[in-house]
Image 1: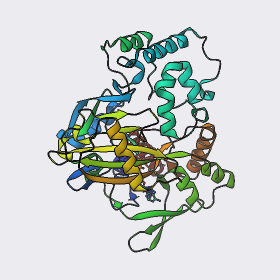
Image 2: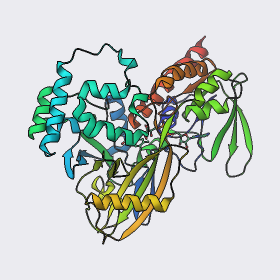
Image 3: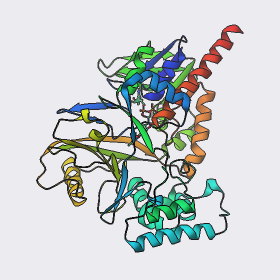
Image 4: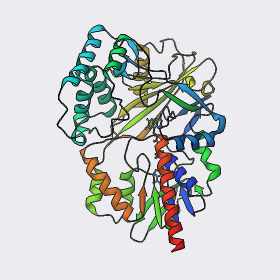
Length: 442
Ligand SMILES: Cc1cc2nc3c(=O)[nH]c(=O)nc-3n(C[C@H](O)[C@H](O)[C@H](O)COP(=O)(O)OP(=O)(O)OC[C@H]3O[C@@H](n4cnc5c(N)ncnc54)[C@H](O)[C@@H]3O)c2cc1C
């Protein structure tokens, strides 16, 4: 029996692609989807912050398009950076036109300096995120966007983070693109998501739900509590009845965060347990708001690098899909990161967010707020640091030796997208299916 833990996209995709191989899928929450869920409140639909689909793998795009048939709409990205009281297009590095001339000059000269410097002698994998920013984008872009934005998001000095995850998320531009961007000449789309797909109605929840007709066994409100990796026993607790059940498995597919999994594996060696406890991450307050005024912004989402704004990003769901809110209103998701064990009172967060939105000219003092609702995403962005680089390969390979496959964004402890979670589930299911077929024919 294959036991799958967690019905987010990685777990759902594993189950979907196991087709014909017996499995059981258990989910702690009362609904499937994990981070890729949506909920309704007072006539508005909110995701757990904006979840937009962008694809690099044609096979996963085809699968999602088949699953959602005609339910997806394509949008050309309208995302901007708000700084120096000005909106400039995202990504910052190729769109400095419109900023004060001295800022544009610092960004341009800093970037040119990086091109004149000899190539860094520091090995790519040993370079800190800060060193990566300085050597790839230069001092000006570091000062005016990359460092303040990322320190606000990560809540840690960028010297502590490594740079092995950056290259696909932060595009390294060519000189002509930086110059064109400084002069306001636009002839190219940049970044990993210049266009994106999003469901026409009901929010991103329709994506995980679209897997369900292809899934034979999923049980909600069941939480993994303990794993005996030698005997291959997993113990679950029913969150409604409080009863426990122990299952024997040949393979355990876990999509829950690595530290949570390792804590539950009672018989793993102590050094691995210590390694898992040392993994770090940042949490995100997802403040969902709505006001009784139409189109407070015509953009999809905005980045805020400056420290006077408490949030690092704000998005406008009704600009992806007008059906996500009440006519005559606007909805927003506001993202504020925080250290996992440090918390702020809700009222304070709402007041700070509102003040920031007014300062940026998005809200007016007269706006009537009709919804404000806070979700705390405990595991949001994992740290790529020197500890992770050593710990994760050791933990994952020891788990796999014991028949436990840890996949998904927090199962592999990485910065991956919905597409990646689906892709990892598919790949693992195909491997387990093959192994099962070999075992049966041997
Ligand atoms: C702020 C933010 C914005 C994002 N925006 C985008 C975006 O725009 N586009 C994009 O492609 N991706 C985005 N992502 C990434 C995307 O959300 C993830 O890649 C994807 O949803 C991960 O799916 P998963 O199945 O790996 O993990 P999860 O969704 O975390 O699923 C894990 C599941 O395991 C369950 N679980 C946990 N513990 C237990 C237990 N003990 N027992 C049983 N079940 C358990 C959880 O309830 C959950 O359902 C964003 C992520 C964040 C944090």
